[in-house]
Image 1 (cartoon, rainbow, N blue to C red):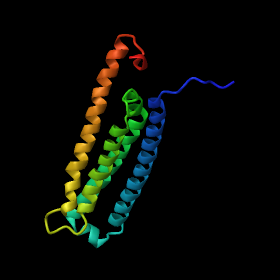
Image 2 (image 1 turned 90 degrees about the vertical axis):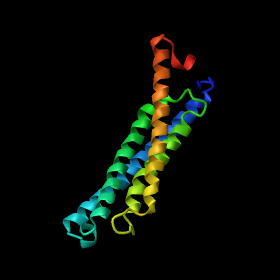
Image 3 (image 1 turned 180 degrees about the vertical axis):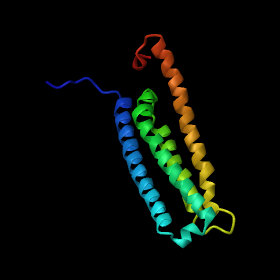
Image 4 (image 1 turned 45 degrees about the horizontal axis):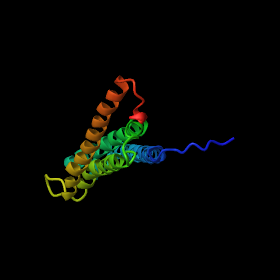
Length: 163
């Protein structure tokens, strides 16, 4: 026997948003882990172009660290944040887009600014860093706000879906 109970639109978009975030998070984590291994290999094999450029090395390490960190934040969002935002009309898709875009812009700004930079300064790609940071903060602020709204419904003994 099949159920004919309609599934709310938020439920459908929540599953899709969760899958998008999981795929992005695991892919991003894999890519930045590979990037980190490449950085270690350049250090281990004493590649002069990498070791001689202190600013470039710092920017590449910052890109790697922020790439891994933002990938983990997106994975946590897929597990905890997406269900928290399921009551929003868009099912949290906008927040997920902000988070994923910030997760791309922030580490890529660091890594790309190491390429072809003038002496002592990062290249103009560093301008992606504050843009990415702002997008991540917007997403985190929306998640923080949703967590307070949800806890109020839970404290009253209401099912948050019935609000």
